[in-house]
Image (tube, rainbow, N blue to C red):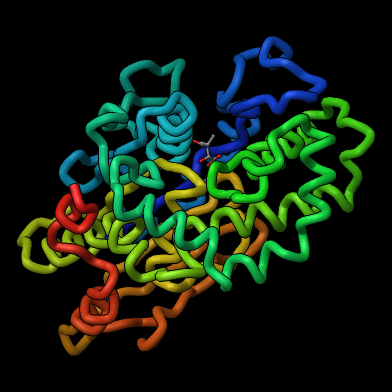
Length: 347
Ligand SMILES: CCCNC(=O)[C@H](O)[C@@H](O)C(=O)O
């Protein structure tokens, strides 16, 4: 069995909070680099990911960086671009012929990025899609969602008082307010900032569950396939087309990598119906490996690395085997792939 091409999507590394909630004890000025910035921990996490991939693909990838073989794109955020750079310093330290400064075992490698307004493939949820906004509203009032949020109603009331956030915003979940508040408390806790007295272990756990429900209900729970056609299916389509091109190309790129966000991983996994319901941790990665079997047939394997202490999980596309023939894979994902995104968005 021969590795033919790999596609990786990862979340950036550890960062500072992105937003304050009204009663937050810590303001942006208390964070050395301000909101949303990659920390040294985050840099180390991505460096480790690069080293992991160097080992995993030692026989597949050329040990020296080769622009014909490798391409990386990042969303247009400091944290994802810097994550990509940290990752590349672990994946492609310069080998003898590439060393340009003997005191520095690092080489510049291009991280491609596109303006937020024009990039419509990596930062989810993709904006400016009226049909998706409609589906979001339908989701919030659906019984599937209401059944899951009902048990938390009293808790959400308490959270509104503790955080100073608007109750009727908090309970619809889709504007990330509860998720963002959980995230800010999580960042403060990791970096040893004092938490408010009400932020007990139990409260944080309940907020984590609601953050997970935010991600799940954003792309799934209700009309998963239709929402995925407008969201995660867009990136699945890009990845699948790139894999198909590699099959028909005489000298295909070996690896394409996307430096992105937790919502990117969530959108793709919910579109593929392989989501584990948990928030993707820092530097988590979903990756696809195209193999050519001895009989010449091409198959795709999907893996998810969300714990650096273990091997990545081999994931199985529902309806297929873990090593899924390319044609079968394409057929099974076709319900979440749209030929005309703008039209389906009702623009
Ligand atoms: C505030 C909501 C936007 N959050 C982000 O962009 C973060 O990068 C988030 O996606 C993450 O992966 O931490």
